[in-house]
Length: 136
Image 1 (cartoon, rainbow, N blue to C red):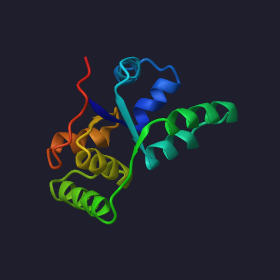
Image 2 (cartoon, helix red, strand yellow):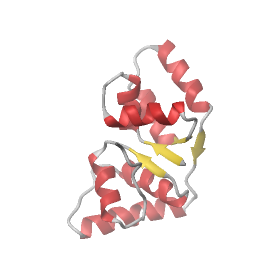
Image 3 (cartoon, rainbow, N blue to C red):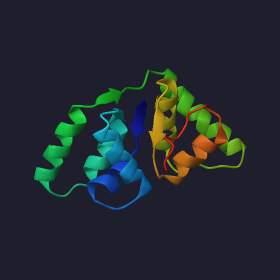
Image 4 (cartoon, rainbow, N blue to C red):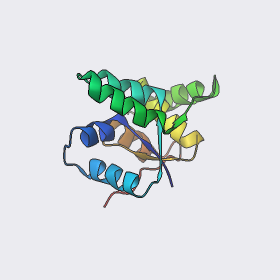
């Protein structure tokens, strides 16, 4: 199982905030599942860290993971089209990054672990065929 873990799940996990997403991430790590990341997720997680010692430890963990990289220009075109399609259906996504994350997951046939409202809306739209990691 390949799972792209969104910033919202990482933040809960690193802050020991009890949430179904943080628990699911802990279980993925225990099971040694294929936990994936990408540049924008790492940037979002690291920009919120205040202590440099914590940052270095987390950076090392991210460096050990598989990183999904956008195909240029295809992934960006897919993300932009997704945004437009959702907007035409009456759903406005607040961040282009969420469209990019969903596009990466779709292209790489990865599940998404997120508690982000916009990611959830993208998944529920069915436009990309991207799926959320089922959480108990």
